[in-house]
Length: 445
Image 1 (tube, one colour):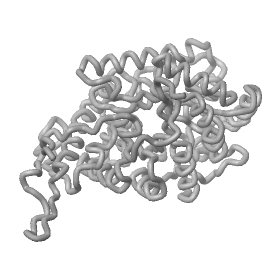
Image 2 (cartoon, rainbow, N blue to C red; image 1 turned 120 degrees about the horizontal axis):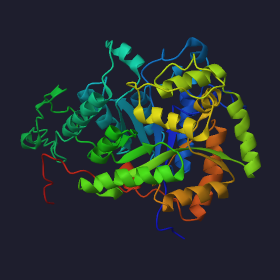
Image 3 (cartoon, one colour; image 1 turned 90 degrees about the horizontal axis):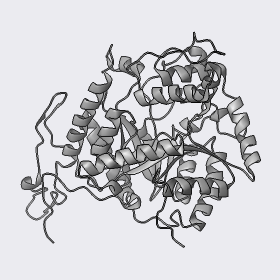
Image 4 (cartoon, rainbow, N blue to C red; image 1 turned 180 degrees about the vertical axis):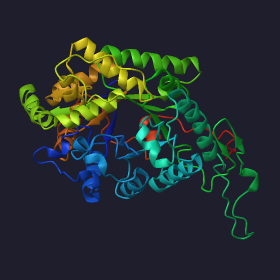
């Protein structure tokens, strides 16, 4: 049996987990985020489970919280995504490889070149998670004393997207003729010089690498603010959405897909994948019993620091047993800040309760048997709340193995998820078209 709609599944690896206590869980690999052998093993397991992609988040600063909390964080050390993912490409054949790279701090030419390289190395499995980087501590690592204002970051990101995709289109697909007899390596008529001069960027081009296998690596985004939604509607092909409640997810899905249609884009050419922490058990009670000790391992120092980051405001002086006070606007992520405030008001939570949630994971959690988890996924898929999920594993390798060994077969049994990959490229597996080169028409034959 095949359902009329099928789920897309990404694995959100940060670089292996979202929960701040994942590395402390009994049986977890505490060094997994910086151990290449462990990461290879996890990538192979994801491919065995027919996952669409390995989604690697990234951050560009270490000193972004008090040392009391920082010393408890496993994310202070992790591989550079565009160094790690080519290595994982060599041990996988179908798994998509999504790397995060910032439009605020990195030059577009280098980003275009690195992602084009990853796409060629992997045979067409690269994706760029385009982020504007809201962390002001990161600015200090790039010679900047002030962080770009929120709206300015998104205007720069829109121009950055145009430059990077323009560079990917530097060469026609058939530009490299490699005529050995006449000694002509490429056709000059099939080369375009970008010569971009804009508000933020000046880039001559062309790119010194052939057009990517997929035309462009898949474009991924995660912004949920007004500016983020508009940028996504204009440019994104995958959205890593926040996993809130079903009604909020349906509203976000309708809004962004509606904006796409208004812009003349086919809404099917974007896959919206909310993040979901998944804990599997033989019963709902057993699954809850698996998660409870994980949450209990979140130290209060970590919780307050995580809450401060989410709010863009120092929470260390708040009354732990009082309500969340009014939070002034900041230059941090606006959507993330608002989600925390809305939840605090809606559920009448104290600062202490919010800190525990911030340090563990306060978004969508699917906790139960494989049948219960599949029921919820099916409800979201057919309720037009998502096109799939970015799965977050509570710990590795156990949480990842349980999802692949138990939940994936149940989804396959229901016809909600593939048994075999549709193609070799990430675009083929996601059902996304290959972009036309904006500068060159495809030659007949």
